[in-house]
Length: 161
Image (cartoon, one colour):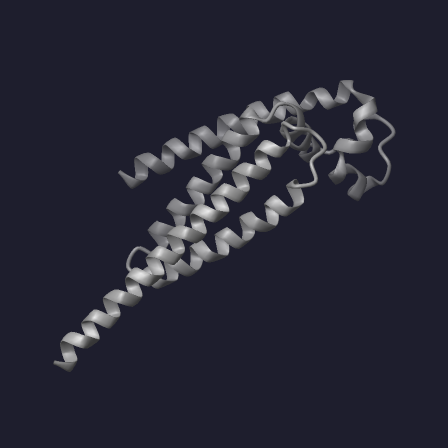
């Protein structure tokens, strides 16, 4: 069952990444948007003067700002895959899985901070997806951690009797 979930999430992530990249390639036709939607190109090359200066990563930024459906699916499926990888890796180590989820929640919070300054209403969708995913990971990690804590406390009380 875990393998089916992972394969499904991987295929979904692959196709949504491809379609987001395709939708974002329309930035090449919109030179007035190059100043605002090409942070990776500006970091690598400085100011963007022609379409050949635009990095492939900026396609995703442009797609997230103006057509966020496939970037949103890409983020959700990626987060789901990361959770599955953590669950499979720390299957017997519940406390480590809780720590993994805490770290994942922190990473999603940082990502949402960088997305927060989006200038478009559609770009804010990814912010909300990242922040909700972060809160859910944090909640699951907290619940998991305290269930482990209670389980260990109950086991110690049995031995003390």
